[in-house]
Image (cartoon, rainbow, N blue to C red; front, side, top):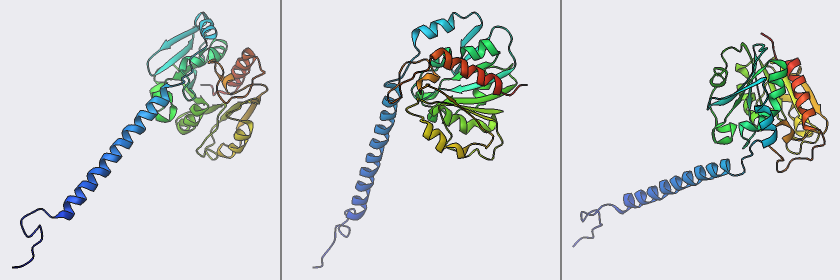
Length: 260
């Protein structure tokens, strides 16, 4: 009589079975992790989304000099008269609805003839929106020179798209990629009372921008002062009048944006 193993007796080898079970457990665990991660991102992106304040939005919509068109991909703001051919693609901050910036940018459109396309990022988070700049510039075919800009996280995304634009505008934001040698015209607008994109953070990121960048600090402006969507958790306390902040933004954009 001789000793036999399960494989000698016609059974399946134990080691391959064990490896298959371990592999199934690993794949199952990874699948569960991916599902939880996606679910977490979806929940995070939809909870605490900040919408436009009712009164400023209503006033902007009632302005006879402003045309507002929602294309799905973005909201297009155009002057009813005096368009200059200049345009700005504006990317909202994280979890702020596009409508929350209409009132803030209305002066730029009506007073200076500049067309603005406010993008509607996927999941309300600009980092999850892979669409190129052309997706939004095509919404206003009459515009011949384009700047790209954004608020907060939207500004970080704008930096990534800046190579396809004629200029870059940062609204309480800074770049995470190096544009210092790009030669691109850049305007950085920030607030002295910003509790999120603080003056120190703006200063620390200067090295990512060209040396010719224009920096404008608006006294008393907070992070949320660059939109009209109400107070924001973690922000500083603004002392600047919202209408004055809007005026400064419009004035700076009018003097900076490239002309056709």
